[in-house]
Length: 294
Image (tube, rainbow, N blue to C red; front, side, top):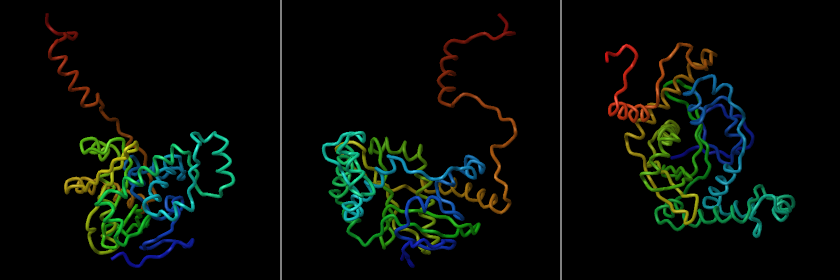
């Protein structure tokens, strides 16, 4: 279904393709295509997208990479990642010595390692996750495709994608229960990413994905995992939002004009929830304004 697939060897990517082994920083810095995070910036304003900085790794991103690799590519994890037992801070001499002499791409303290390995164990012991991992699959696979409406090149990067077309997006979360994870879906626009990734998959393969799944894994012990699939409204809302931003991006590419916020004056008030609260309080205790009759 996902064909053809090539391994990244420093080539220039300017047309639809599926690529394995593409470094994270290379993927995020790719010119001539736009990603979901880029579309989020376009939605803020085209000027914000145009003036974006280069992608930089952070400790949180390194932890995310380690968690992904630990359960998706355990052999790579064993080779490229070092956990320094007995070290609880990156200022410890043992940690600094290990980082300098191990030659590993990533070095973590014992406390960080506990989170990484705890997450790995939680995922591998989940029956449904285990069944999916046992399928033929690809990890960290980047797909480039042309938007059929505008022709612009877009890109997505799947955490795990099975040959049959099941898509996994691993999400670290404070609380994986449904009522809490719903807040994360809204706050971090996961629904938008789900719609965009699902559609790009279809643009590249010609078929809809079998499923798109969020694997919500809690950041603290016992590192509980819940698997969710977005409902139709979730995907429709995400599609509406990314479509608006993608059309704007295409217009900017064609015109060369990347406008900031609109110049028109706009009426503004209090946040809706504050307004409702104050309105209720004001109704209970009416106040007189200048000019009101006594």
